[in-house]
Amino acid sequence: MKKVIGLIMSLMILTVPLSNVLAINAGQEMVAIGSNLTDEQRKTVYDYFEKEENSVNEVDITIDDEKKYLENVDPSRIGSKSLSSIYILTRDKGEGLDITLHNIDWLTKDIYENALTTVGITDAKIVIASPINVSGTAALTGVYKAYEQMSGEKVPEETKQAATEELVTTGELSDDIGSDDAANLVNELKLSMDDIKDADDSTVKEKIKEIADEKNITLTDDQVEQLLKLARNLENVDLSSVSEQLQNISDKFNDSGLWDKIVNFVKGLF
Image (cartoon, rainbow, N blue to C red; front, side, top):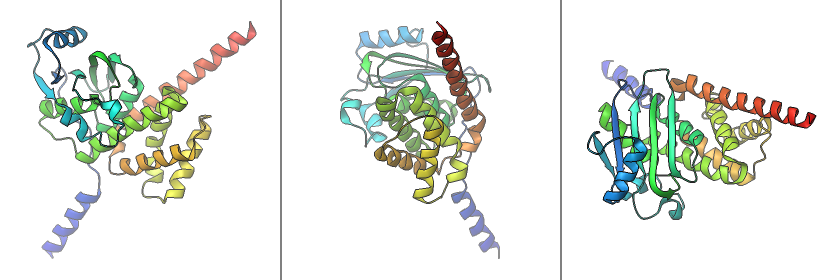
C-alpha cells in the first residue's frame, strides 16, 4: 500500500507544475558578460551598467549558451559572437521590473518583461546592453545564468524553453503587428492559459482569435499556428504564481490604449 501511495505522489509531482518564482533576497547583483567582447567593448557595456569592472560578480555568456535555446531562430538574429551583456540588481517583492536597453534593435522592454515574468523573474533592475546594435535574442540566456548563480537554483528547462519561445514569437509578431500589440496579445494569451490548458487545438485557436479580435488585431493563419505552438509550450509553466504580475502588465497595456484614445479624440477636436 505504501508503494502505491508513493507512486501516486510521484506522479502528482511530475504532472503538477511547481511555482517558478525565483526567491532571491533584494540587493544582490551580477553581470552576465558576452564572452566575445574586446577589452574596449567590455568597458562600453560596463559604462552602460554604470558599474566599474571587477566590482560585480560575473558569469560568461558564450555563443553555445545562446544557441542552446535558440535552435529555431533565424541564424541572422543570433550572429556568430556573444556580445550581449546583462546587469541584474534584485529588488524587494512588489517593486517590479525596471528594464533598460542599450543597442538592442529588435526586442522591446515590454517583450522582455513578458518573457522574464514567465521565468518567474518579477522584481529586479535589469540593464541589457551591447557595444553595437544586436537583436537581443540572447539576453534571456544571460539572465538565466545570472539568476541561477545568485539563487543557487536551476530554472526548469521547460520554463527556459517556453520563455525563449515566447521572446522570439513576440519579436516575430512585432514585425507585422507592432511591438505593443504583440506583447499585449501574448500577455493576454498567458492570462487565458487556465481556460485553454490541455484543450484541443481548435479550441485554443478560437481563444487566440477571440483575444486578437478584442484587441482589434488581425492575425494570419500562420500567426495563429505560431501562437498555438507557444500555448503548448506554456502549458508546463506555473503561470498562476505570477498571475498578479501578468494582470499588472495587462492593466498597463489597457491604460495605455485608453490614453491613446483620449489623445486621438482631443486631436480630432482641433
